[in-house]
Image (cartoon, rainbow, N blue to C red; front, side, top):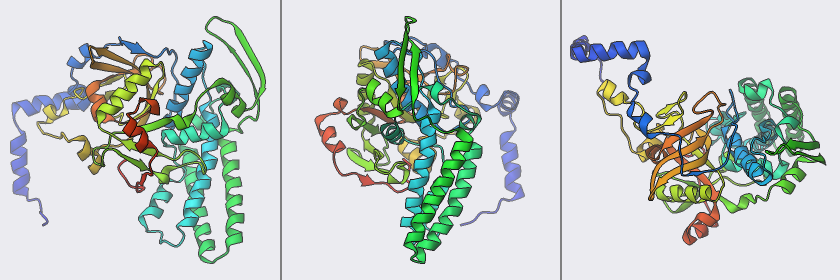
Length: 436
């Protein structure tokens, strides 16, 4: 039933608004902005930077104007492992290297999806989802793990950041435009039954994607010399390593030992889900989520931190966050009080309506406990050292409960029943699912 606004109603709204309280609040909000006007100073006293458990870290990384947080968070856990093992806590890995291969692999799997769905109309919801995802930067932990497993890693100096890795929008748009046009060509060939020409065109298109990415990012090295000074200033040199040799020699990491625990209360708990729509490497690690109540995510994350290892986690970082101080707290801004409205929703309601999403990935590197009570968490972000406390954020446990959706932990920290579930056949999620 439609409703046309009348001028009488609008005049009633105007009269309702005009009172001394609203006029004072409006002046403060217009001059200082909504967030500053509603900032809650009580948060400052409880989000201190002291933690009972911390992974030893130092410098932070900076993804700048790119959507590579998922890759930064994964490589941060690996570099901290290297730093702990080889006493080189400020050693850094190249995100540009794995970013390059993601563009090639992601284009390949995109063409697969387009070929497989060629019999469906362009207006089909799945086809539209694939076209929307063309050239994208965002990703999941399993996508980064797949790239490392196949291509290894290199130190940051072996393939440094470039303008186009720091600012990915132009390359992202160019690849999206190209891949969408390629999709039209491939669909036409498939529907005409020209199988051989389809494969010929796919190879041609992938070569063009390689060329575009190499021009924008630079080609990845085939070999490099590992050279670094440890924390005691001792020089180390290991010559002529391939990226895969480097990873296999210096890390003892089996990605199959890890699982992504998710807390999505709009989905059934104690169930394994998969998201093949976002898989980026054919033959790689499939994206799966074991959906569990929040207590299991907290407990597994704490166990891993106490074992000296950071935790990749997916979250909705823009909710109740102050970039300057690095505070993450559900009571950070009192905007409902400012407006005199109620916008509170449950976590399930936020996911179901699109208000909540997994918009960012960071690394848990500490927690503060007091007799079993979690006071706060230490978070390593990838926004450089000018945000937060030299790049580190402090998160309340309430924020963890409300806005954290995924943690990647070793399977040894699961219950026996959860370990069995982790090996079960997952239920496939649609490309438009709230976890996508």
